[in-house]
Length: 366
Image 1 (cartoon, rainbow, N blue to C red):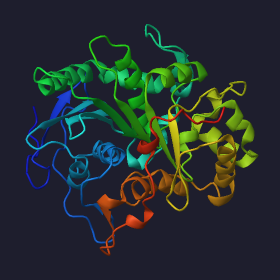
Image 2 (cartoon, rainbow, N blue to C red; image 1 turned 90 degrees about the vertical axis):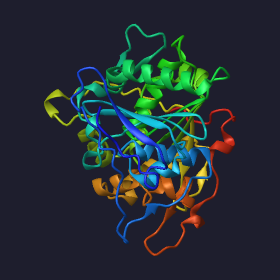
Image 3 (cartoon, one colour; image 1 turned 180 degrees about the vertical axis):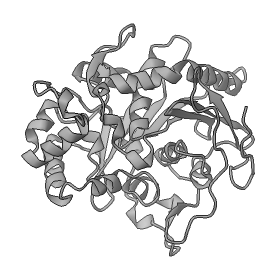
């Protein structure tokens, strides 16, 4: 097993151990934490004060165990977090002040939307599973590729944390593709007799994972909060038929190029049927969190994609970023991020969806 950093200053006295899933291509893990950040770049400096903030820190840590984000996730001192890898799929599991956190890594930053660009974006039933509906083939296969290893690690964490008493709650999180994988894993956990149902799933800039039948069952059995940043197009993809009809010709062309990169495989008759899941929370231009996401708001956001971004890929990428310079951190956990000038980003903070977690799901019929 590869060695990993255990510097008490850098990793909050928590070590990271690599766990290779069967037939793993990536056998190792770069567990060393990042060095000091350049003055022009914002960095995490403190512990997040809300559950959603700590889960955002954990989601960012899944991209690489960099000390600032790892620290603000409040992983427990003296414990060992485990990183499971198979090919490009990766998940970090660790004990925090909240319970056991499972954080799925999203797509590498150099190719934010590359995981849409294959036929695996098509909906299909998950054969042999107990849940209803059709799901994203690529996301489902990604979770299944590491599921056995993840399940073993989870059982190990739950056994060691119970101490003869009640098991610690399990929280799932992830950004981008990582959020989508967290949702698939959550429904698998729910129907696994040996695992507890997740206490909560909190995802950031997550792509859609299933159709209306999947959404209906998922929202009935899993408690999820889905954060969506202004001008982040990923939470609208893959789309529903309504979204495709609501886009103008130029935006439709951009989305088509993401979903069908090879024009020879494009199915013009294919009807997209993806639906949003969970309690949706929108981060607006002023970094305030809007907890009532209506169809009218979605219509407005689609028009913004067309008018405010000039359909530039770099604008979409900027809105999708999950570090301290992005809208997700500035709205959800500004207290952990300090700009290069030393000014705390606290003026962005307004509310957290966690305060509304027990409300009835508010979502448009898209």
